[in-house]
Amino acid sequence: MQKIAAVSLQPGMVIARNVFSTEGVLLLGTGTVLDDAYIQRLRLFGLTSIYIKNPFTDQMADSDIIDTIPEVVREETRVQAVQIVHTAFQNLSDTGQVDSQQFKETALFLIDEVIKNKGAMIHLTDIRSRDGYTFGHSVNVCVLSTLTGVQLGYNTLQLRELALGALLHDTGKMLIPKEILVKPGPLTTAERNHMEQHPDLGFDILRRQGEIPLISSHVAYQHHEKFDGSGYTRNLGGSEIHEYARIVAIADVYDAITSDRPYKDGTLPHEAYEIMMSLANTHFDPVILRTFLNQIAVYPLDSIVRINTGEIALVIKVIPGLQTRPTLKIIVDAAGHRLNNGPEIDLTKNLTAFIDKIFTPTEILDLDANLA
Image (tube, rainbow, N blue to C red; front, side, top):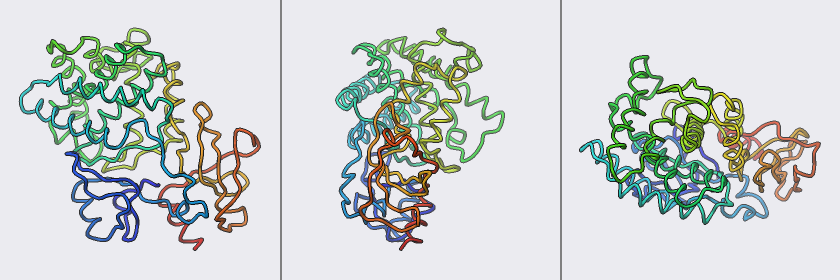
């Protein structure tokens, strides 16, 4: 499957993953063939992108080679969590009160599912509407942070504190004017200064909630601090920043840069990997960052890539810790001929071959059309 921007959707494309509203309503199901009316409906709901079927996978002789892409959290679990967080944050905006029980219960069932699927890697990003970005982001940061905590060997209590803090890390944004929060473009200096108040605002709300551990509240307070002390709001650095907040800071940035927004497409995983690595020791704790990135599929399953031989291939297997050396299936030979049952190449064994390009969704569609 391939994620494609809503503005690039065309009639005849086939949906590869269910599309839900922020409220958890199924808008269009897997297998739906898009037409003009469906495309217009998706845009009206503010969807910035959706997943469509990969034309190359469907046309291969063994098209079931990637039957399903494993996920850390099931689709229905994620949808339920986003719906609960949406309702709880809306209530916070209306009343100024945090329903701590809702957040605790959501954190617990997310932890339970992450533990069950702790061997899975992050291959897919979730699809969000423009207005539902903050809620989906909170859930995804919780999932990414919890997975990192599991890999670090956290016990049950630590995972609960971490997951709750991650889920609530952007609580203060509920007190930021909506026109700033969802502005489709760069913020002005004044707007940026206002936005940077959200860690203080969130901490102030959460620390007064007796049922929320203070250590979880400090995640909201510290998640924009940087490892070298150049962050905000208190210019903390290194071990002065609580380890939970150091984890959430990494998950927060990764999810933000890989998510599609109305004004820009999300960064592809391999580019995000390089960006994150470049920020080790400055923005991020390098040890935690390495643990986090070991769970990210740099070249996700079903990606289309080119290798240095000139051949074009489908990513069919990724091993944790060796994400830059996946197993590939050749779909276009070096002469430019489409192959329906090409050979496989394991880059962990074939050390002279390397990936020199990953195709964007639009480039994949163009490639398919040009080879037809």
